[in-house]
Amino acid sequence: MSEKYVEKVLLDQAAIKEKVAELGRQISEDYQDKELLMICVLKGAVIFLADLMREISIPVSIDFMAVSSYGASTESSGVVRILKDLDCSIENRHCLIVEDIIDSGLTLKYLEENLMSRQPASLKIVTLLDKPERRRVDIKPDYCGFRIPDEFVVGYGLDFDENYRHLPEICVLADK
Ligand code: PRP
Ligand code: MN
Ligand code: MG
Image (tube, rainbow, N blue to C red; front, side, top):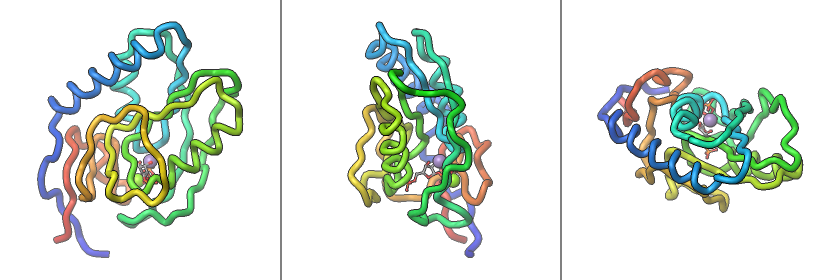
């Protein structure tokens, strides 16, 4: 495994804050007359969920699922594992999956199929980042913060081998 370093800031705190507020406004409007359950995909989406839910002006509850397909690699293994399931039933509930990034799409494809089988009233996806160039399966977010180029990014919840999640910006990681 080659050594990595933070090459540059791709999205700074102000840009993220503005976009998250915009997504929050849009989601609040779209779910106006509904009770929303936000499903955070641990661990990467935890910061995004925390910021996004505070921009939502309608009643909302949250639950968490832990899924992992990346280990100490910048490539998805393609094998999605559920490490922690939801605490609650989602039957007849309006659910919004909250993701930090869609890359190959394998994680969300798996999650979408898995959650749809539990008969929610509706199921949508919000992602902060999307790398459409990398897609290996057909999946599109209902709400997307930023489309980004095919570079490995960390920070604002996103990791490389469990590091860098605490960075307040979204940064590009490069080989030394
Ligand atoms: C990352 C990221 C997304 C997923 C996207 O999670 O947070 O959940 O990969 O990749 P994909 O579209 O190719 O499936 P990861 O598996 O690294 O777990 P983590 O959230 O705990 O870091
Ligand atoms: Mn993740
Ligand atoms: Mg990860």
